[in-house]
Amino acid sequence: SQAFITMADAGSNQLSRSEAEKQQEREKQKEREMAARARKQKEKDERARVLQMLEEDKREREERRARDVQLQRDNTTGSAAARSAFGDRSTATLSIRTDMGALRHTFAAETTLLDVRAWVVEERRRALSPLPPANAAGAGGRVLVPNEMSEMTRRGRENFERQTARLREEARRMRSGEGAAPGHNGGSAFAPPRIYFVALNPRQDFLTEEAMSSSLVSAGLVPHATLMLREVAVEAAEEDATADLLESAARADAAEPSESESASADEDEDEAAGAGEAAAAATVMAGARASEGQRRRVVGGGAVEGAGAGDEGEGGEGGEEGEER
Image (cartoon, rainbow, N blue to C red; front, side, top):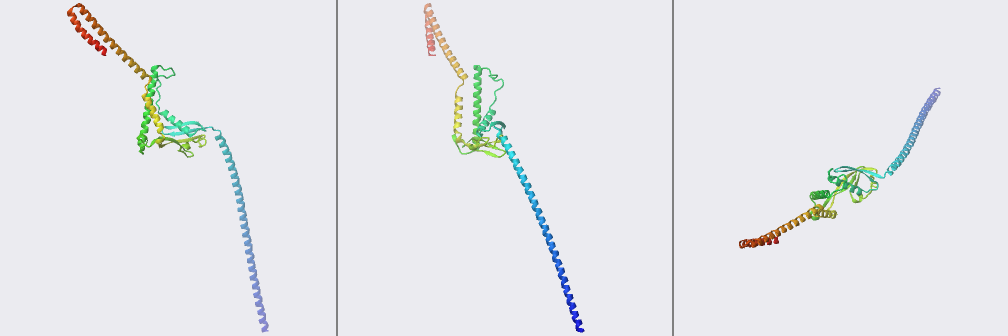
């Protein structure tokens, strides 16, 4: 019986161990299932998050594409409108800033910057030239008489001489201020500066003759633009021919007498010739009177004859002096 009890206890213990193992196995299985469910839920959540991100990216791409299409459409419309607006313009209004103030003028679109420079030079020359007074001779369009013509000629010559002297003085000051190596006629190697332009918006430099030969439309200055005047010093060799021509013209004009001066000189010569003729006539008349007095004294007597001889000598001397004169 003791052995039976021992066997029974052993079987009971083995059964208990078996139940405990099964219980542990069930618990492990349950943990594995819970972990599997948690993993599946996590994968499901991750998949949902990825799908949401893909949907948001897709919606953002569609919106970006729509904005790009709209922007391209607007740019195309704006460019077409701008091209039509600019294409219709055949003129260019330029505002040119100089040291004498701002100049504003409208040019043809095909006008070159060289033509614009010539216009600026002419405007500056016109601004520096003195205006004639309102009551000057010849005002009102009436015909000038010779005296008024002479006065206008004299004023014109004086104005030309003043302008020439001013230009020479400016050139002399400019050449002496440069202090460069000696050039033409012992002066500086630089001539008065040449005019170029600089566009402000957008910034463009037209500082060479090649750039100045471009038209306003090709330079992008249509329909309106603002230019800054830039004066650049050039070598005097390029300006020698023009300077010599100007100096020769000024010298010839100064040496050539005016009509009034020629007329005055002719009148002075005529007056001098008349005065000489009058003096000669007076001398001849004095000699004739002396000869007549001598004849009367001869008829009157010897004393009178002697006096007449003396007078004759004096008259002869006067006649000789008259002939010499």
